[in-house]
Amino acid sequence: MTCFDRRDLGLLLLRLGTGGVLAAHGTQKLFGWFGGYGLEGTGQYMESVGYVPGKMSAAASGLAETCGGTLLALGLATPAAGAAAAGAMAGASSVHVPNGFFAQGGGFEYPATLGLCATSLAVAGPGRFSLDHALGYVCNRGWMVPAALGASAVVTGMVVGRRTRRLREQAGGEQQALFEE
Image (cartoon, rainbow, N blue to C red; front, side):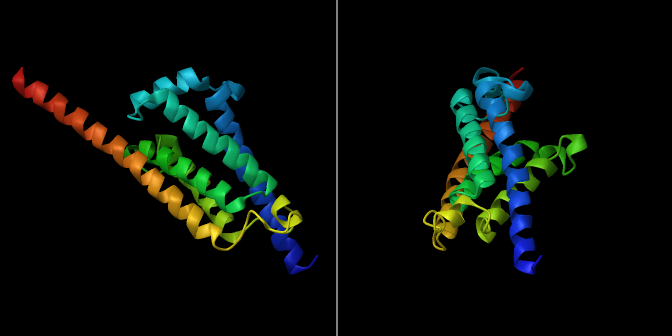
């Protein structure tokens, strides 16, 4: 096995693992599969952690994970797929940051790792064992990597920033209510 084949096989395995996990988590949010709560339950959770409106936030997150993960696993439109998944994982990480790094304490380790893998695949490309390769890389051009990651960073920054402002306003309102009592 040549070094080139090993790299392509490694990218395939990374795409299948990362994409499969992301897609499974997304279908939990969208459809309630694999023990998930579906749009209704996930929407309620999203509202409780500051993503409003919750149901729309659950749908956006679920679609980014399901579609991004599926496309990563297939190796199709890899820059867009990786960027969408990375954005969703950045949003998830922001919820877990107050709990520290490690997952056993509720930290952001797990979503950050998935986001890093998705970003790495967007940058490195899918390898030869992919639909992008089979289609002549029409959905995976060099300029698409910074464009997709940049767009995802802007949108994610806006969504997480809005959530952060909302949480600060709520905390300020609660502190004000305590002073008035």
